[in-house]
Length: 452
Image (tube, rainbow, N blue to C red; front, side, top):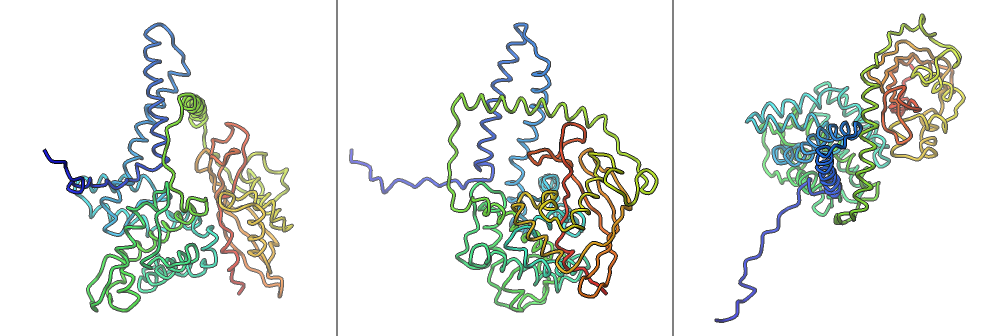
């Protein structure tokens, strides 16, 4: 028999990697597998007479965590499978519950209802406020904040003829500042190692859709933000809610993309290598300790109740710090105002929850100095205090700012959201252990206060 020619062999089709194949998921898979093995050993031990109450509770929590993880692992891929071609992609900061619900609707043959849920989400100002703050805290985007605020006002008020072009401009310029090449350029590289937003099924796929050539002028309503057709005046039927929400969603996904790049993930191609047995045991032991801590936190959650506070009766509208109970969110807000009044921007920066994740305290202090330049806080008071959750409170305030150049004043009503966090920036129930109240608030729009 003659020798087989290797060139005649059919090339094996390479399987595209899914989001579930990301490094972080592989790492978690190993931990889950090790935990499952240990659970099996403990089951045998119980049959031989050994029982440990803490381990019983830990493995009970593990079963629930394992179930949730299996769902979390597959949802981003399923979401992109169903919706990327329609202009939606999964990304880190997009609500997981929203993505899971949309996948369930699509699997049930209700894709229209799923898109309606997405549209509702991205036309609700409060629901996306956190995502907007994350985006504005990315250094390459910060100078675009005034344009973003204008685009959002147009978007939330149904002026889609104005919001869509602005979102597209923000997308292109933002990517250009990060990569020195625009989002819609053919050679732009958008995939980033170990990410959801910048996976090949995410931003990479959606860029190709948005960048589709549009050579014919048409008045027909479109549902996808074709950049060339819109900005070159060919797709005249672009001014609708579907196009606006999809450009906004893509802009927010690019915020997550830029954050991952700034973490040093660009040009990384690291394959996952399973840890040694010793390292696996160490990781499992750490996880067991974490599950025990979670149980203790649950106990605090069960006994926690929101306070019923009337400002002016239970606590003063404005007083000394000693007038407010130590460890309470209203005391933290009053401390915040003290720092603003005396222009201690370093201490102020250390109290900001979101900003500390993406900026150094020194850099954030410099940003705050620019925000408050030319204006000073001359008076303030508390209006309402709401305990929304064991680790979250919202405090309504009334602030009076004065412009230094002419003494004009403006009254500014603001609500501050505070999160009780431990040393690792994790939210915890108040009273569980020593922690601090961090302010999840973006001060940048104070820069644009209008002194009439």
